[in-house]
Amino acid sequence: MTAYPPQRIILASERQRYLAKEMVDGAPEGAVVTVREATRSLEQNAKMWAMLTDVAKAMPEGRRHTAEDWKHIFMNAAGWDVMFLPGLDGRPFPAGWKTSRMNKRQMSSLIEFIFAYGDTHGVAWSEPHPDHQQQPEENRQ
Image 1: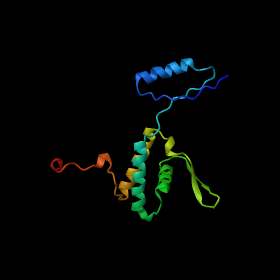
Image 2: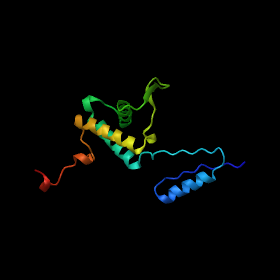
Image 3: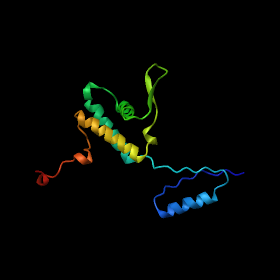
Image 4: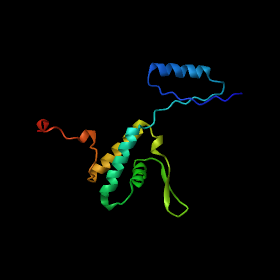
C-alpha cells in the first residue's frame, strides 16, 4: 500500500473548492478530511507583538514584564487556557494554548482585549487603533 501524502487547500475561490471536492472523491478508503477556519495572519501576529512591546515599555501599574510574558498574561485574562508549570530551574513557564493556533476571529478578539487594557492604562501605541485614529484637522469639530 502506498502512502497518501497529506495535502492542503485554502478555499479562496471556486477553483480551490472544486479541487478539494476532487481530492475527497479520489481519496483512499479511511482517509481523514478536516475543514477549519484559517489561522491568524502574519499581519495580525506582527500587530500583536508590536502592541505587547508597547505595553511592556509602558509598565502599566508598575508591572515589569517582557512582551512574551504579557502575551501569556493577556491570553489568560481573556479566558484562554494558559497554565504556568514549574520549569527545571523552578521558574514557571507558560504551557497550553498558543496564538499560532488561533483563527483570525480569535486573534482579532485578543488584539481588541489588549487595546482595551492599554487604553485604560495609558499605553502609548506605536500604531494607533483604527477606531482611534485622529481625523484630519479640517474634519474636527
